[in-house]
Image (cartoon, rainbow, N blue to C red; front, side):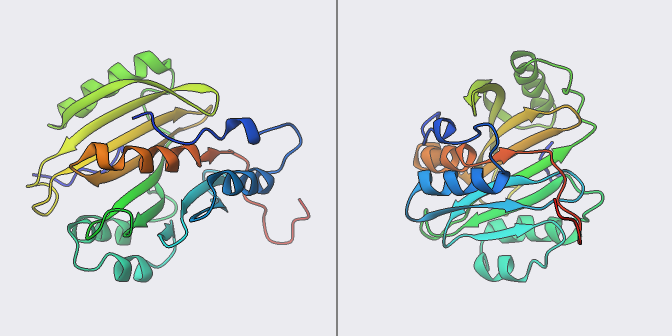
Length: 233
């Protein structure tokens, strides 16, 4: 079976009340998110020259990889896991100008002896960009089903004071190095591209629902381009 890449439960921490007020910079927003998440978590601004800056949150001991960076630390943190066997070859082949994958968080502590990861993807050519959240959820149900995946949920949910599409599906063990996985993916349609936040976890959804949702709640899309070298912006 071919490798499946992202088009690739509503438990969590509500952060919208303390972020996103007028006049704040993205750095201010990241600082507020990090404070709201509390001990054991952090939030950082990721500078992505192609797709715009965004805020990515993670447990403090998780490994964070962004497009264009070496995968050495990620490989060391996840060595010997089915996750590493599946994802590392794809990330090593990812290029900053062409890949939809822009960032990955690999958490090896929250679930003993396993990896929970979340991934930021950006697709400027997604056919669902013109759809509303409800229509997009149903469209994604069909698209994922056509890939041979067992779609468990396809619906809308609330994120950062807006409705977005959400899909959850199971990845069979034969696809993922002998280990079944449960993936939750949220889709955020912006003006020029579809952003998605995907949480890849062991096939025990109740165990990771809060962790995945907290990662999503700590994520923000800016769209503003990273300051160029020498800029005073």
